[in-house]
Amino acid sequence: MTTNPEKLKSDMQRLGQAARAAAEILAQAPTAVKVAAICSAAAAIRAAGPVILAANCEDVDRATARGLAGPMLERLVLDDKRLEAMAKGLEDIATLPDPIGTQLARWQRPNGLDIARVRVPLGVIGIIYESRPNVTADAGGLCLMSGNACILRGGSESFRSSLAIARALSAGVTAAGLPAEAIQLVPTTDRAAVGLLLTMTEYVDVIIPRGGKSLTERVAAESRIPVIKHLDGICHVYVDGAANEAKARRVTMNSKMRRTSICGAAETLLVDRQVAGTVLPVLVADLLNAGCEVRGCSETLAVDKQVKPATDQDWGTEYLDAIISVLVVDGVDAAIAHINRFGSHHTDCIITENTATAERFFARVDSGIVVLNASTQFADGGEFGMGAEIGISTGKLHARGPVGAEQLTSYKYVVRGDGQVRS
Image (cartoon, rainbow, N blue to C red; front, side, top):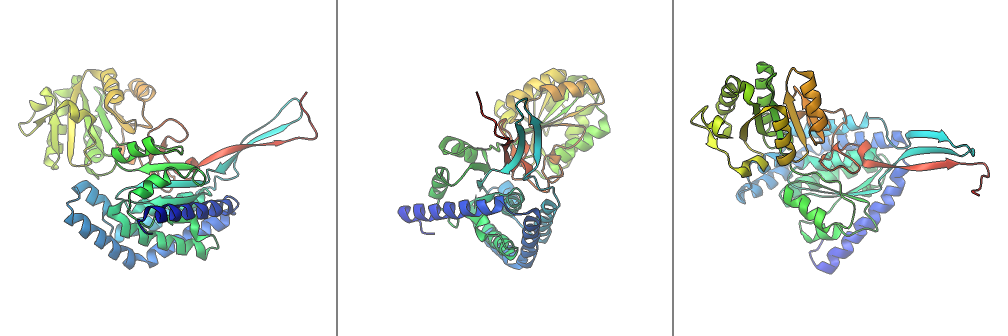
């Protein structure tokens, strides 16, 4: 694609037209054909492994030279293990039930009308993401299984990697007899392409941004197309007064330190004052010993001289790094109030052995995912049995939580009659 404005607009229109045509075919594709296409795409990813990794090395070298932040760089890097996980993720998607055509409900009216609610594809989905090239494969596979065509716009940092992956996916799709235009990547890093994609109401049915807060805010502000939002992951772990200490240590460490750069990583630790004297020093020591910077309230500062003072800004920050803010609170109600004020409605965890307290937390925390006695890093479509995900939706309209194949559908009503007319 050229960056000439008129030519860019024309090229984007052609992408949209091709996607709309592909969507009509995909909506009618039998399950077996979609499964074959996804498995073929997985095989193509493995076959193109050396090409994809070489492209990724180029991306990483350029990003490093430009001083890309550590967490973003970590998301960008591919290796043999991540490449295999990408292919395996596609194969996992292929084992999922086909959501299209599923009858969600059916009933008869007194006048004899037979009404059914049936699941259908959304159509054409525009997906805008940043430095994670694996999103290209996840998005392509999930859209295929749900009968949708997709137009993908990856970040400039991962452009070469995403392009190599998209070419492999297209090769796999066409080998199964489906149109290559089922999965298209915008082949330019020109930011103007994003603006054009957000106005293509004739061709695109839904936009999904997956990236930082600035990307999501831009998409929400400029899009003329409905948006499924994936906001930042300001995730919390709350250690209740009735927590098991061993569980608290294990879950807190995994929630924060397993992978600090993912949206499901915990960014704030809340500790009930009832156990702050015993549990807090142990948790702080665990985090510091693991190389995590701890920023805390006055009570946390008193635990260890290595703790740095937390500011008001820390409570609403997604670090995506080995940094955590720690606050002592007066019980579950104070924890809930803090989470609902400073959180991003992504994933929040309570550690407690008190069932009533856990149920109170579940009922009142306004987040897409709430967790009891388990790591926040399970906030992932693969871990939920969805094969993969396009993101974690933090909104309340349409999908919420992990967005998998089923969440990329809508429904229509099929009404069967026998000559009825309305009086």
